[in-house]
Length: 217
Image (tube, rainbow, N blue to C red; front, side, top):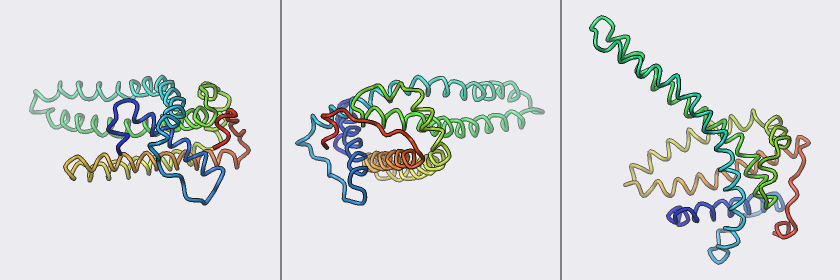
């Protein structure tokens, strides 16, 4: 939660901690995970840079997808205004406007889930390897998604629904509660990535080879 209050650097540090959690779970399954230690702030920052860069690259996929789903929303939303001025067609205009917001809601969820599916192999690969290479290795990304996409879609849909519900509770707790929800979601995101990567390996996926300085953790 403290990391979330630190602009730019804080979320990168949190990403680095998440990568170390994933690496720890892989090496010591079933064992308690390491608690975040601010004495290792720079270590987390160095590790978090790579998944952060991978996430930025992933936005090149997310932005076109978002724009694609926004087109029908804008067409319906602004098109409905043509029916609102006439009493005979006003009901149709209201229905079109309501449907446009439903379409927007479903589209946002779908785009976010698809983006998460792409980001998972990119961020795990870059984080574990300690370099940006796996984030642009389309062969690895394609293989990862092909082996795990069904499970990732179901998991991330549940993650988003639970996250939205908890976020509303966080807003009700004078907004402060939202930061604790975000911290919980960050750790949950790390665990979902770990499960997806473990499933990928179990189905014959190629393990990411970390740099020597990263392998000792």
